[in-house]
Image (cartoon, rainbow, N blue to C red; front, side):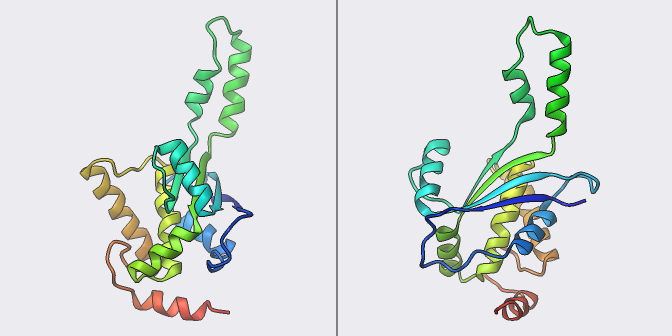
Length: 192
């Protein structure tokens, strides 16, 4: 089974940025970052946003008034159920709600990736655009699955997993400035 990916492009993307990666690569990177069972079909929405939209989302949800590379909005089914349950709710209705939500339990959530920031960071860090996009998809997917980097132990676990996934895809360590031979080859082969 595979990750189900709904891709949306913001209408106000900058004309100066390069075209975002094609759907099949975004799908491949999301699939590579899936840590669940092979027979599960997680669903997520990936929206490629402008700097303005990223800044607004970052301000509204994180209290930071600047655009950022990737934002993750995990779906939390248990919160949705508990927020809609009352003490006097009939058991049949509660069972129906649980069944409705269990059918969507593989909905991971939403990712918002800012094309302007990703392109700018790749350039500033001397990384290929493709590898940085892959890293942002992988990083966001891991957040949707509960990984985080709030403390050192969490950061070490998440970064180690990111490095492993990136290397499996033929990219170099995203936390170093070296470009792998496979990555250099894939970049030249995929130009139109």
